[in-house]
Length: 102
Image (tube, rainbow, N blue to C red; front, side, top):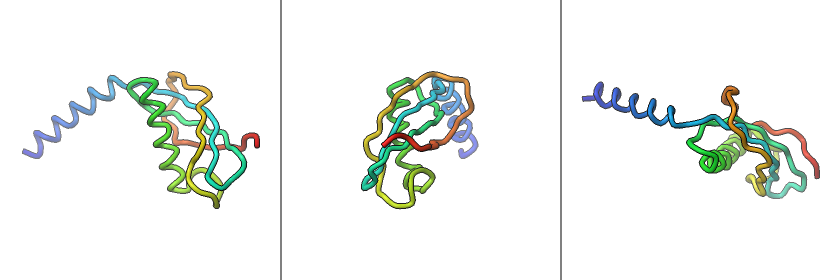
């Protein structure tokens, strides 16, 4: 039944989230057709450091498509360089960008 599958789904979600850690990720990125770089910061949940890195790229792409990061012009995210990735207890935070070097 629907109620049983929902309960099973809730149990699965709790098991997955119990295995996840929270990571703070910082780095730089550029945008297609734009010469300058931006710094970025985010806090995400992932199973391990490698998965956090993969999720970081996905989150940056999603934020760019939704026009949450980057300049009004230019294309998709390019040349992402992760400088720092550490476990944290900070609250989740979507990608944010701020001016970097050229």
